Length: 213
Image (cartoon, rainbow, N blue to C red; front, side, top):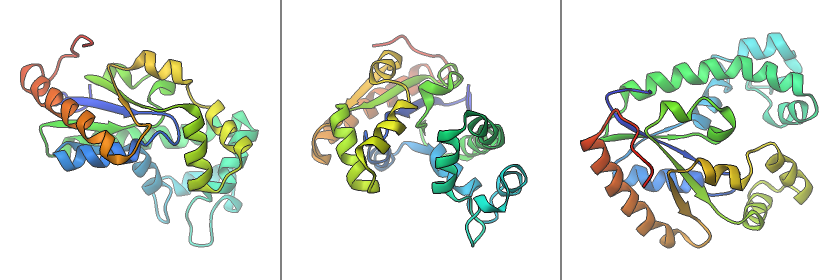
């Protein structure tokens, strides 16, 4: 288990579900939030630990002029070529894991909340966590949010969603669920309730995976 002396929650959800908003609200409550997507961005930023391996594997064409990974170009490549996707994951996943472990050991807070976009898809995260929290919303709302936020077409967003676990698969993996189909204010009571639950569980069983409530 990650940072075995602390109770840990894995936060996940489909693209456009509102994971970042939920993570920010938990952080405001006092949870120690570790965002694996932010870690991945740091690793692929100019001078990041993954850049040399990415250049060696894919070539300088997949770097921007400032030396970061060209995320748009890489996204097109890995969607079109499963082998390229596997090659990129082979570079990134061990680095993300080690950086996540380091961040967990340094984190302050009563419990750890790991924001992990592909928690269900990875197959290896769940057994390392005390509890899994899924942010859920209708797929039509996911589409609307991502199209507006990223200026992508509906087919492009659906293609991304097709590479992720289904809504049913995520819900089946969940110990807890936050429904994010309204505004920010509607999230607050749900987050306050779960934050109180996690504080209680962290005090009573910090290193044991509790039964689903």
